[in-house]
Length: 165
Figure 1 (cartoon, helix red, strand yellow):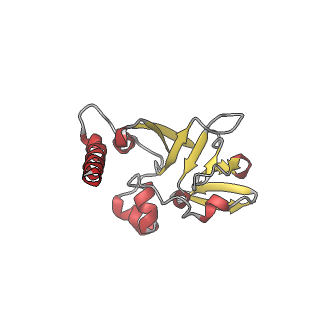
Figure 2: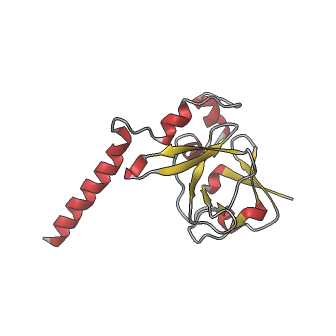
């Protein structure tokens, strides 16, 4: 009986979370970004031609890679992390740290490199981070990071490319 109750509640929670993206009055980050004009714009076919399927899913469809799947999570060399889609420098290696989350994390972006929007998906409000130039989805920012900013820019490694100094 307990197993059936647990499965029923779990299914209901997941269903509500999925449906929350379609409730009136809630604008998800993907809709907010889609209505913005960026310096670099391409058709879906053009993005698919230059991005791998996983890059397209994350950058253009607001997906998330599996934690621990990106080699950039353990990259600590000196250099710059750029947008995979448009090569805009986004983060300096000087602000990278190990957050223990399984995603590359930074305490601050390069000034003027990113944009943010409100993401109301999954029954929670988060701040989505996207590339200022092409609008590609990078990840989310949280307020549990290290000093001096107190912020954790939790990025999808597939959305970034590391350029050594």
